[in-house]
Image (cartoon, rainbow, N blue to C red; front, side, top):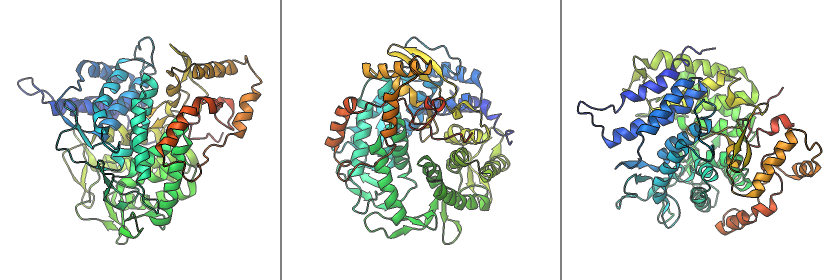
Length: 540
């Protein structure tokens, strides 16, 4: 296994960010450098644990508690702060106990990293105060939205919050985070064209599309990703139904010979016959809904591009079979490796390991430098740029490692777990089924059921524990409901677009949803504790 690149990165993840934005001769550090410093440390933190570097994880947690301050005069991307900072802190918080960090009483419903995540997320809330409920793209961490801030935001910058914000609401008991994320998703859904597509950029004040190119890549990508992952994490059929409707339109209008092009959102005519490296997440997303055949065909198309250049150029002209001018770089993005990891867990196809091997060898041969791994400025001649993106540590390294480490705790199939006592009863954690946010920060779906204030939820957890310990062997009531409950049934026409319908559904949720949220239809009990969020099935 090509681990010679991966193992040293455990130390690199912890040390490298300390050199960027370090104090100057006078001991001062600009606010922007402080923010960059904190962001990179947070982004790489859970990678340390997944690679097995527990001591560095513990040290970085202490560094963050002593140094992170979000009351700074910095204009921050709402999208990036959410996926990297909020997502990274939530993941590290939920993994702290596994990493040997001494957690406080009430964990996972309380803790310093959780409080930091909540503080960071609250800094983002002013961005959602628009007539449409769709957020601005940038917010000042000290002053809120600047008066002259542009109202134009990309689709992904609006629809990529439900994973982190719903997790935060579940752990803190404050519904405001999940609520604003759901409103943003609903408004995007309502803004789709008559042929079922969304554009690239929209005015969050008027709801009018500014850029009308529709595709699966940059500016749109993680919106689709979060419909699927949000549906799995929250067991929300409406989110999945939204994605399945989009998927039909995407197939009808953007797919050509297992490539996905950019088209005009209202007419479906081709606007850009290019493949963007960010689109390489799509086969992995297809695998999450069980569309393995289409996923593999598209993956193999993307893999041919990798083999042509030793990496994926930012833009690739499909008809010409070559890079696009000024888009020849490869900043060590993770998306193709991410898809390989998902598909290998689903299929065991050795071709996917070959991609992993090629990726390790290419990165080590082309981009390795004295202080890290540099962005490839031009794949045609392999010139390097003097920078390394934090997503290389947060995502690329992580997915590569998980591709070659089948026994990693992330891949747990529910056969082992931890029982934790919380103020709301006994809780199951670490059973598997982790949901990665778009920055590869894993969220334990079971944690969302540990801190609910509803007694009904506590009773369900206690029932599940009694079942496991064989105190109740015949649970026909649960079995019947699991058999009669479909996994993802798209709602009928007209039931998705109305926020009122969604609010009414949430009000009725406690009375209508009798089936335990901590159950997995048609799975043996050893897998059931991994929850419905478990997307990889062990063929053994």
